[in-house]
Length: 466
Image (cartoon, rainbow, N blue to C red):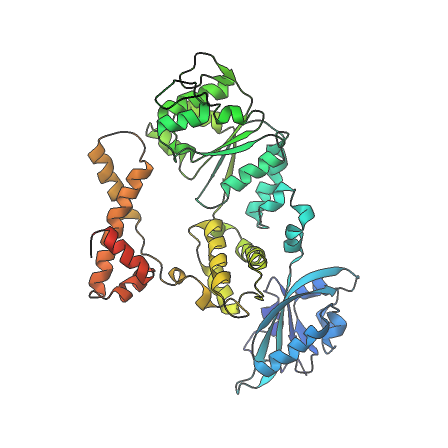
């Protein structure tokens, strides 16, 4: 078949369209002869498009597919897109693992005129999944975007120093994983890595958890407790949500960083320690400093080395890589024989903004794999809230927090409990608004809010709206 009359496009050639795709593309006729292929596929195979045109596909894509070539004929007959993995051997005898996606091409009368073949190099994903690579900390963080490559380039330097590190970035970007990778690649890797959430405990308990206490220090202290700083001796302590650390404990932490020693709660003898501190926050510490909610000297002491983890939507090309990685990991764990995502599901997943970042992305894949009953993850297997997002509530949240702070008349940072109080008011208002718009129809109200009916029923009862 002549490639010039395979398609009819105004002022643009098929090759120009195909060359704009960053993966290998081949257009094949019904006899499985190559009509056109793009530059990416040229680099995979070692053959130019001019050499490949009119040649049977098996001579260009020499592969381990075997009977899977039958899949090409099945696509022509059924009109269904299929996806599977295999290998190709290029002109230079190099083996490349490939994810094949085969789709039918039809004319205006819906008659099959060929197939569209998408080839995606998955060698990096296979490298990540090999057991022999699991000890290499850098490979636990998935990404090949320029933004993540900059971080990977810094890891060896960060791992070989004992200086404090401050990791910033939105919630769910993987700050805790990055901290652990740095520890694993450091000289302290044979010693403990202990994570502490500075906003999870009240001040009195947090001080005891960090620095330990002596017997009789307070009611209930029936024996000595070593504390995390002593348990992490010669290792690393990861202080997540450092912006929530109470001011009195900020003073004590600064003293430990400077002097390498501290008093346990109720103790009269100093304890010497040798630990490295990695801190993380999703908040602006500079802003907290300017409002007197975080000590400036501690900020500079922690901010010796700084890393910013970008939001997943700002990591060029990483969303698809992460989707494939988590899909392979989760489907293997559940022993489900799902072949991948449908093209429409991929379109939805790659265009979604992921406000919860990598954590949310993984949860979405896990949900979809569990729900999916077919051979491919389709849009109906994705969480419904992706299609009905909640309205933006930034301004109401700020207003609610301000009302709460005013009522308490304090200058301390907004605590977890105040954020929950503010959200409770907002959630109640959202439910009432949805019920009004749906004229009391709870099914419709649940759809507006992106919840299931049982979730809405539970929240209605919680807010006393029944």
